[in-house]
Amino acid sequence: SQKIEQNSEALNIQEGKTATLTCNYTNYSPAYLQWYRQDPGRGPVFLLLIRENEKEKRKERLKVTFDTTLKQSLFHITASQPADSATYLCALISGGYQKVTFGTGTKLQVIP
Amino acid sequence: DADVTQTPRNRITKTGKRIMLECSQTKGHDRMYWYRQDPGLGLRLIYYSFDVKDINKGEISDGYSVSRQAQAKFSLSLESAIPNQTALYFCATSGGSGRMYNEQFFGPGTRLTVL
Image (cartoon, rainbow over all chains, first blue to last red; front, side, top):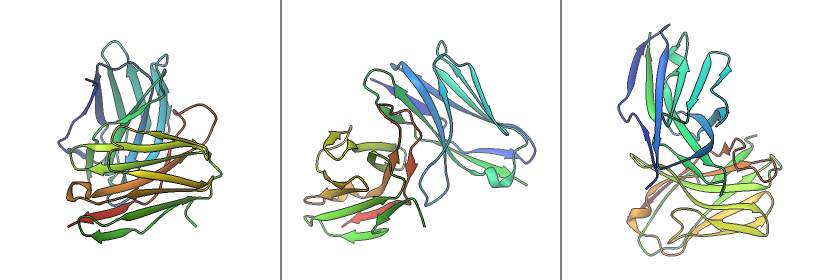
């Protein structure tokens, strides 16, 4: 069955360092992949979209990679700040049926 | 004003009761979605609607029904609530035509507790 894995354990990182979050998937061939940020008690907020034929996408301090061979996406936040502390969700979208599937998210804590 | 609003924000009800959660949007989007979020299970799609006349089941539609009253309104009903429907419910919208990969805009969520 299709499975999306994000590290369920919280990631703690020192302010100023680069945070790297992982999204792995199996039995899935997504055409697109999105990353969202979710703060406690609030709805997710869209951050970035990357297509299957794109290797890397950047937006300000954010960078996403998409490796369809490894079936993995990496989400990087450079020069991390305490305000970056949140849960980050990846979402995979299949091309054929346009189905959207979310991962369970990874909680990031940036320590001052 | 928020682009996507949900009412109520919190609701406690009893097993067997009928519950309706409402969602309104001012973004002018055609597409609307209902998700539930449970700890350790992430966001799961309940129903989605591409326009007023198009309603589709998601991965966990059993026990739920929806109504798209207008382009801007999409409501979710639990005909007979049960405790395992206790969860955080989100409404979302997206624009564009024929593309579910467009970013989704989420409402603030409704926390539902079924006793």
